[in-house]
Image (cartoon, rainbow, N blue to C red; front, side):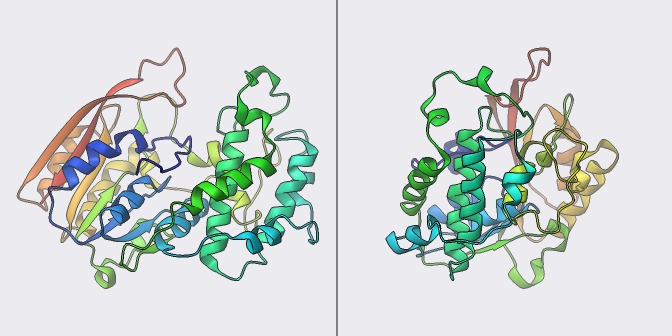
Length: 339
């Protein structure tokens, strides 16, 4: 896990992995479902400790990252693959170059994204395609000054001389392919990546011993909209096929995908349904003291299905997306376990 490349991803548990591992390592389970995989760091943790992993997210780009690093056990991108990916012989609609001109990156960088997007389709292996996309996503995030896609236009004010901002996307991509190649390994299990609403997951067929939940939290301030921050990566993951672009927005956002966990009026009921759906599995919920519903409510919900509920807590400071006027950086991070 020490070499896992973090992505500046809202709510990612990458810094909490050692703490999560210490607690989960005491539990008896062979198969694990990571229900809201996000950056994929917890799915990769499960794989690293020898579990069979089902990784799920309703965002396409998140499911691709899990496909490239969790489901994929042996496919890496070699010289021949890189020759294909970086080839100038490609056919493209230049959709990215036209749509995001003067919004993100230079014309040369946008053309590179059109090029790689076209060339990825030439790879025959779904795992290799996913790995290439994973490297491309991290390249885009590293090149974007704040790591999110909410700001546009002249980004020179964010240029503090960082190497990430000086490198071209092409250079980033080559580096990231090398990084991710090193992370591909076989843990001896058939791991799978899913892209679906978690309520549609067939737990009767796959029967996970343990289900780990890290859903979007309803915060007391701001919002938890992943599409607002990562719409560019979600669109890039499918070349904007079947996505509706909101043309009136400065950054050409795509339409928000609905999840009941984003709203106070629906989140509590959604948690209750979730715990009921997976009541035959060990339930593990990552949560924050800075979210709705509160800890007592969630514990009471889990107790409807489990005889033993343990709450582990850890002081934690979020550094992502906090406005100076919002007093919400220092929180308690909870790991709630129902058995």
